[in-house]
Length: 514
Image (cartoon, rainbow, N blue to C red; front, side):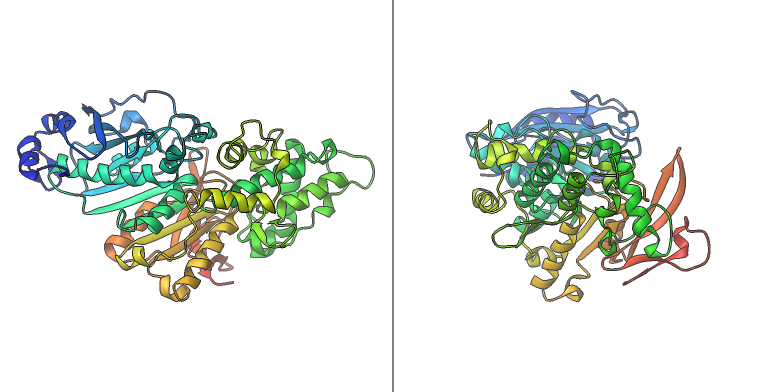
């Protein structure tokens, strides 16, 4: 089946001169007649500068520096569509294309959790940088923590797992080519959490979709992560005595800092490399009556489980790495009064297909193997063989906050090491794959350390100018003022203080292998 006839495209949509579409209003609205396989274009409309209003508020509160306010988004052509590769599929997507100033490139935008909506704020951010951009609801509507859509709908689960992102990418590139009269010269992906997993899945399964992939804190070992998240909840809800109230998280965090902060040569409230920290939760045990400055023996026991890796009790093999030291201030979604819903829903609706399943029933021996079998490589994005992606010039820039309370930062290190081993060693992948660990960064954003950095700028320099990123400068902002900068170093290097100058200035640090 033909996608479109270029002669008709050029007639309807005009020519392109240096990335500027001619007759843009007519070109945009005419896209409703574009014929794409299994696809219906439901909207094609020109949007004036600052004129976009989302159909509903975004489910996450976002700090203003994370996205471009809609009032500042430049004029664009907005195209919405639905892809139905199967009878039970209903993949909604949108493509936004700058009316002027297109940089000739395309950006795919990732989701979070179980997705369920188009990520408009991040589309606006890409558009403001001159990119044509696209996002999808991954084939269903709902909150990021709700997996009930999967019950009785295996095709919708496949859409969520990988098909929606790939279909959206293919269709979006065709729409971009139709609007501008030329295909994007380069395509990038940018996503964190589930979006990071989506990026890795693209590299593994559809290596020709993107030229560069930015994968933040990827939930790529999905089934094992879902086990660890529930296992940690089991630890603190073993009984009422095991529960650690959120009011004690700062106590634990400060004890970790006291034990390990200075080990990197700088006492700055951030652990440069928590993997090198040795902290005994027993140091916090109450010596007399329970009080606000100590933990009971059951709480200490639960804390040891949380920090430790989830281990199969029969085989003694690791299921998933433990929760990172230094992440304590973000524990409430993980260890609070209720277990983490994203994980519970996976077991309820995907593995056991029982909405009444109780998270206390999880067994790390039999149930993790069952989850892997049910998934059969669909959601999991763990294949270390990225040869096809790298061979065609693909670049993978992965980052992960050392203070991530939800997805263990060690999982990113383990995946990097597996890719290196599969492809002949770290020196064989250094021009294609770089991993950056961000000290003090929580899940995808925020935290005590410098957490704001331009991963896309680093990717552009790498892919377009053959300048691999050895370090990326990150900043910390307090009260709208940058009060600290620090280099993020390509793994396995870490930032080390030179010994002179203020420790809040990145120029006084070098990247070295410990």
